[in-house]
Image (cartoon, rainbow, N blue to C red; front, side):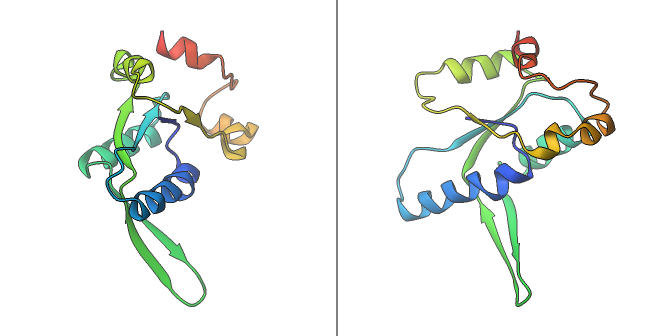
Length: 131
């Protein structure tokens, strides 16, 4: 499970796991992506991943070329605002072995938070959102 399926996660951790799954076919591992917040961005991500079976295209750009690749390591996407109980059940599921989260400088910067209308970022809010 990964909490906060933003650009950084999709271009790094999900990519690395996708590489691993291609090198080790038959693995029953996958990422259950979870979004806790309910912003326009998060709803667009929910809608995009939901309409594409959680698949997305990652484009690697360089001065010489662009390479596009479909990433399939996210196998489930839960939107806590719609169904908190599903998130709680997924975390409590014995098959859930790892829970990760990414907090980037963008997520924590005061200017980004002000733009999103968030007065204060507090990790303890996760408990507040889920319960």
